[in-house]
Length: 112
Length: 111
Picture 1 (cartoon, rainbow over the protein chains, first blue to last red):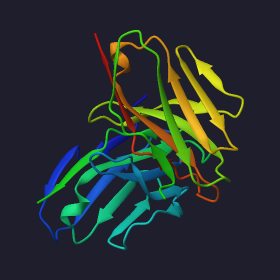
Picture 2 (picture 1 turned 180 degrees about the horizontal axis):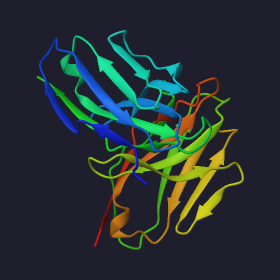
Picture 3 (picture 1 turned 90 degrees about the vertical axis):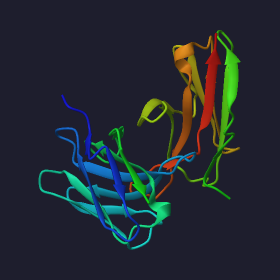
């Protein structure tokens, strides 16, 4: 079985641009969460979706948005990119809310 | 005060050594506790959950002290392959199952 897959793996954007990151959860998993990991820090929670509904939001500005599709895949969108948005963006999936979270390999975003 | 605090290290230990990592958390009503392992430039992977009674998985032992809001991880007989960053993770109440991660503790096991 394929694990959590994220695309793209690497991305370079310019300040002010918009970016869309994609995540496909493990087959059968209905919950997807997004995390941002800045170099030298632990992952920080951005969003959680379960059954296509937002179930949690971390302390991130409105420039960050996400959605979950009927097939449980998810997109994270970031508008008006800042240099500080440079990070590894991780997606995690679960089959239910209270089970183990499995992480994808991440998308490494560099904003220049 | 950060919600989950860890000593960032690095911890440099020889093969075969025993090493202990500590972590404190701020929300006394937190529900679940974990240790994750993250290799360089890779995704975090669950190492073990942490239970109040303490739990062991081979060379790894995790302890939870709810009164002190303290979590520990003990690694015995360190292997070169144990070199990684160890992340202390807490699920606070009413979080929708979001996870709070510490900064991580870096371990380097040397020959």
